[in-house]
Image: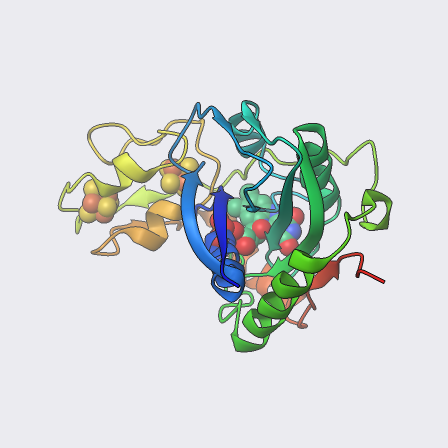
Length: 252
Ligand SMILES: Cc1cc2nc3c(=O)[nH]c(=O)nc-3n(C[C@H](O)[C@H](O)[C@H](O)COP(=O)(O)O)c2cc1C
Ligand code: SF4
Ligand code: SF4
């Protein structure tokens, strides 16, 4: 049977969106999408008949603060849900527990929780992930979660109080002369940090690198001395493949 799935995601560079869409396709079809990357003050109530997949990246071991703020007026009505975080091959620390706690406190019944590796924003880490093996695991997990019992959140790794994190990074993109002033990055910056001149970037930038990845003429880059020193070192440190983690309570 095809299950209609509602997606809620914050996903500046697309990993969290891709994983959620892969899961949705495995169990049914996407009914609607709440894109927290662009919707800054959404209000939404989901019904008990809905099935929701909520996904977000890990920033410093936490869910990005901006994503948590945008989730504040999103509510379930005993709505079954899968919670997903994607992380860049380092660790997800307390982020998955944080997102599961949010879901339980907002009227969702958590049927499954998972942390999936995606390409890291910085350096050249896990550049091909999520790959076909990750996608197969996610598909299998989504089918099992649909039929699973409610998950006891105590099974999810992580600690309360959560570690300090979720704030975004210190690296700032710059703009080259190749910029055509098309305005795409201005419109799609999750925190509206790029001024109308398409170049000036405010301190509210969270270093998500969405502007760098999505510029059609590769005019956005990060070439600050601190980033150029950090990126290769970080790439080398996180070279070993990390596995995904899946939590569910199978029906007996
Ligand atoms: C500011 C910042 C902090 C990050 N912190 C972590 C982290 O603590 N652990 C990790 O493994 N990856 C970390 N990452 C990488 C992202 O979690 C990873 O690339 C994620 O899949 C991006 O999701 P998205 O494509 O949906 O935006 C961080 C990325 C950024 C921009
Ligand atoms: S997306 Fe690229 S070309 Fe378009 S305004 Fe931004 S930097 Fe310039
Ligand atoms: S300006 Fe900063 S916050 Fe905005 S898209 Fe670029 S990296 Fe992300």
